[in-house]
Amino acid sequence: MRLAGSGTMLNAAGRGEECVAQVCALLDRTTEIKALQSLSSALKFELIERDHAETVVAFDANVLLRMSKHSKCDDIVDYLRSQFSGQLILPGQVIQEFWNNQFLGVDSISSAVQKKFKDLSDTIGDFDERFGDYSERFRKLIGEFDDEYGYIFDDNTARKTKLFVDLLLEKARVPFVSRSLIAASAEVRKRTKTPPGFKDGGDGDFFVWADLLLGLAELKKDGVAYRRVTLVTLDKKIDWSRGGIPHPILSAEVHAISGAEFETITLESLAKRLVG
Image (cartoon, rainbow, N blue to C red; front, side, top):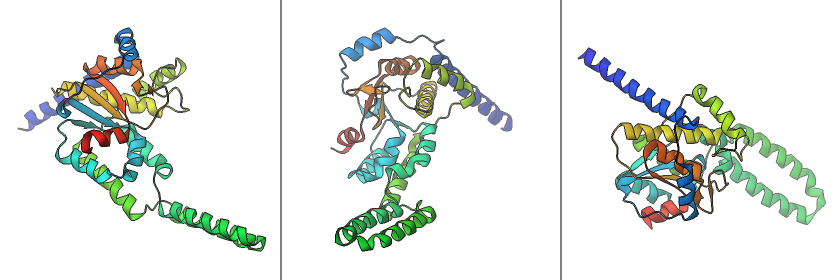
């Protein structure tokens, strides 16, 4: 039994290495992509409706940051948990991006206090300049409060964020490509303005993309059938999409690794598809 188990682990490791090799070859262009066909399709972008069972849905970091603010957050999570029959992928890089940038996207107790203080400060300033000294002292106190407690979410934001994260923990595949294997590709692609990420300063978007491609390769290797890959993102820069049409190179890479079609949609569009 132990030998059989070890063999199973070795086989799984071998399949994983094969998928990583496929992604590296694709990113480095040692695997052919049908870029011209993808460009032709993008010039007249039309996608037929697909069943959820044929769909892989992946989430960008900005969606993880903003999900708790959406009015239908609870309904979206409930649908994905109980009714969605497709596959979910959370690129590993997204977890890092979420934690590093969480204060830009969600309200903490500290940020709520700061908003209230600004209103109070503006009101005091309208009355008399003599209160200006108090405004400065309040501002210093708020800064100290933020340093000490800025990480604490308000209860509702924390609940909804954890609700979504727990869903992903339960149902999503979380792939990571070895960074050392693709670091050189990140540099070359940035220099040649290969999407995604050439409009940004760092390589975060590239690593999100590489992790997503690995997840797609793993699903294919595991025999999971799917015909559409949907990335839910709020990023509207042209290194991802233009007017809702994904960059042709991204579509070509998804097709090369999986044979599936690719689209990017907003969180609002996802909500309409799932819960109306």
